[in-house]
Image (cartoon, rainbow, N blue to C red; front, side, top):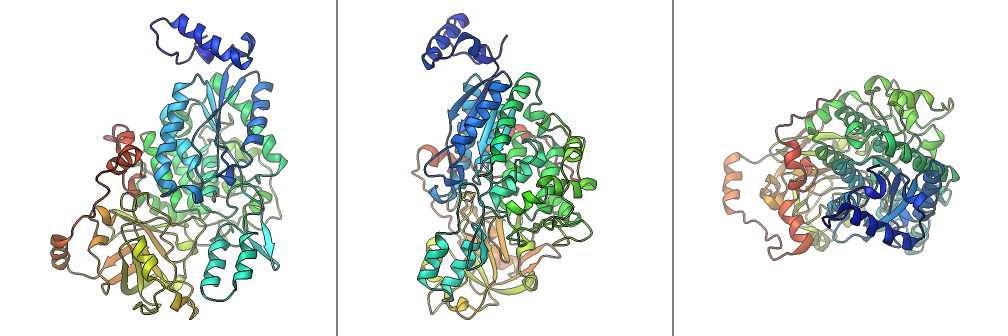
Length: 574
Ligand code: FES
């Protein structure tokens, strides 16, 4: 036997001594020789008191361990970084690559024959999948699962689409302090991830579609007993993966990534997920191309009626049959012959799933929520490397709009001026935020949902065209152009924009154009001074600033993907 305790021995120049020493130490934990001869299933522990989305991780770990032991394996839990959206300074995106490095190296360093990756909050599963793709040890993802909902004055609330909606009402003076406090206490009523189709739910759905988690993993509510049974089954299945695979390189194939991106379009998923999947795929040497993703969106309609594109929540999608109800409807657009960690092909998984004939959450292809996919890719002289818009949750009348730019130079500038009574702005203008990209902020904050200027909000303005090199929470909504690439901090055209310039957004034509002549742009470029990007940084911050890639390349570190992508053509989708 070469696996288990014999895997990856610490190097002393005498392998037998290394094993002897390892066993001597691990026996201090009370393990028997019988236990130490079993296949070892590592279980990531991402519990943190700063991470309510992961509050149930201890119970999930206990259930995974039960499954591993019932299947004859030895479960070994180990800690990794945990990232929560609201407790990650400067941003969770800044830390995603650190979590990926941490998880990958811990999988490599420790003698695990397979690993159960328990994640949930937005950046955690992407980081874990990046790690699994690089380490290529048999892996199965167990999401923590979505929160349940609550109501406020008879209206159902969801984190965090309704966080933004109620905050906008408060800013506009429509509700008072007392009411916003009451809402604050009701938005996140249970443990688990945000229960709308935000980034966490989107990634969980794409992971299941990709074949990296068991059926039902994306939608079972975090606090349902069914999720503990899923955890037990994931543990048992991990023992099977340890013995006979498939490994991540067999599951995370170009076809599987295309399936995941098809699902992203069909669920009206988060724009963030596109960045994450691009990064995960690159780790497997698969290049995701923005234009073919956009072409995919022209033939895949939004089928899932969930906030922020629709009206329901994740618990309703689960009752409707979960992701399998979506996959069944998308059958003609998916690659069905791909393997999954369940041991079945995707076709077999769909065939075995339960059908709910009276559900109203997943529409048919002939009767979609939105006629095309949720996300469109824009190009033009303002975004030569691309930009994205979630047009399924935008205002239809603004999708073809020309307006005057009102430019904010940074997050600080935005905070200082957006509510100023003398801000020169009208509802027809285009709000622009720059220096909020992967390097500029740094960490590409979810600041793309620029607030409506207070004086306009008080006049009843609910949406405006907003453009930035930042990201946006998957739970947000509005006519918002994101991920403008290249970002302004490295000299992208956004850096040359001036208040008063005309900007044309034409989503049908996929255009984002700046109405300024090339000569004038060249004149401005000659005068542009690059912002100082923390030249004296050290440690992780320096690593990040020197190596982070742009949004169209997934914001991974260049040294993680350059070799894998050398001479690789973009994946053909469809
Ligand atoms: Fe963790 Fe929304 S804050 S999933």
